[in-house]
Structure formats: C-alpha cells, structure tokens
Length: 273
Image 1 (spheres, helix red, strand yellow):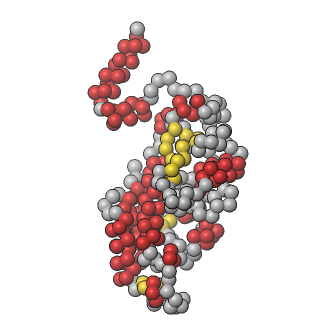
Image 2: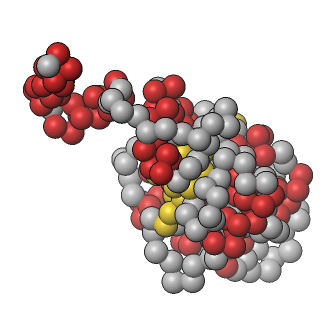
Image 3: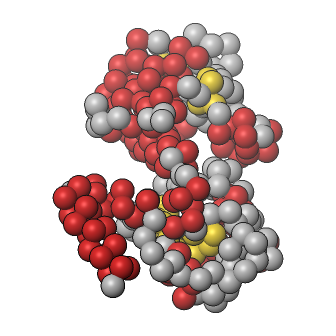
C-alpha cells in the first residue's frame, strides 16, 4: 500500500502560468489529481523540491514551519525576489513587487500548499485501503468539520446544492446529515463545486476546497440502516447481525489478540447452546 508521501512523489510536475481558476478551466480534473502544481508557477526547478518537501510533511519528517523555511531558501537560491517582481531573470517580469498569495514566498501560501497536498494524499491513501469488507461494514461517509475556521463556508448550502445536482443518489434523504454512500456521485459534485463554487479542487475526496477544514469519516452499516439509506442495489440496508473480519481486525488492533480470541470463543459457545 502506498504511503501519502509516495502518492505525492509519484505526481507528475505540471509547470503552468495559470492561476487557480485557469487550472480548473483548462486542465482536466483527472490530470490535476495526478499532477503536482501551484498557481502561477511554471518553474520545474521550484516544483520538484516543493514536491519532495511536501512528501516530507506528509510522512511527518518536517513540519509546516520547516517546509516554509526550506521553500524560501530554494526560491532565494533560484533567484526569486518578490520585491523585484518574482523571477527576476524572466522576460515577462515587469519589476512590480509581488504581494499576497501571488508571492511564492508567502507563508500563508506555502503552508496552504503543504497542508493541501498532505490532506489530499492522506485521502487517496485511505481510499486505496478500502476493501470489499470495509465498504460493506462502513458503506457511507460522513462529511464534517475537523478544523475550525474564523469564517466558515456554508457547507449546508454546498451539500444541498451537490445533492440536488445528483438527484440525491445515495444521499441521506433529510439533508440534515452530511452522509452519503461511498459510491454516491455527490462526492465528485462537491469537489466540482456544484452550485457555482469556484474554490474547489475537483476531487471526490477531502479537502474538497482550499483550506476548508472539512474531512470525512466512516459510517457503519448499522447507522446507514437506521437512516433508511439504500445499498448500491437500491435495497434499504439491514443492519449486520454478526461481526465480520474487518470488525475483528479493528478489535485486535484496539484491544489485543487475546481479547478477540476470548470474545470469539464466547460467541461460539453461545451459538452452540
């Protein structure tokens, strides 16, 4: 199974002068998912070490503060100076100072790059780890906030817009809970910005939008059954009556093999009586 760091390192470099909106409009989502890029940067000499440093963040070898320092040192060595227009040796440099998020040395921008890449890679790794058993035991995702924001986006409106766009296929019907089947097209709709949102990343997995603070967690089959969610065949789910191997593996990791052995033996004794 590939680690989040490996997932980042295997991304192809995509040097482009496009801004974020330009990437969304001109580069297909599947290409963006397989590429490493940052808005308004066509310098592979920066993108390559940036990709490597993002992988280090993803595997916990360095923190975001170290990432900012390393990238600033790299940019300085490459001749990038925001006070002189950025890439000082490029013919399109007009010499005007680069400010805000357009500045590649911006701490806010660099932290956002590291955070977004790490979160996307973690989500891809989690999806790749899914098995038939885990999908059966936990057939849905719950979208919820994991990181608080001073000015939170209205995710209720986003959820409803995305649900409407896919005719509520595989979505918890009340709209009050951000729960949908893992196979529901709502996840791609959210990533595509259904409802006219332009800050999204085009992915059917978190973080969905830049700096959103949103993530998803697994929802058990039992919970799905109480919500009258259908399975992929359109039949309303029924709760599982007996634990499967995925449950036993989870219990072994949490409580130990001895606990699992004793519990399974006790259940077998109950079946025989």
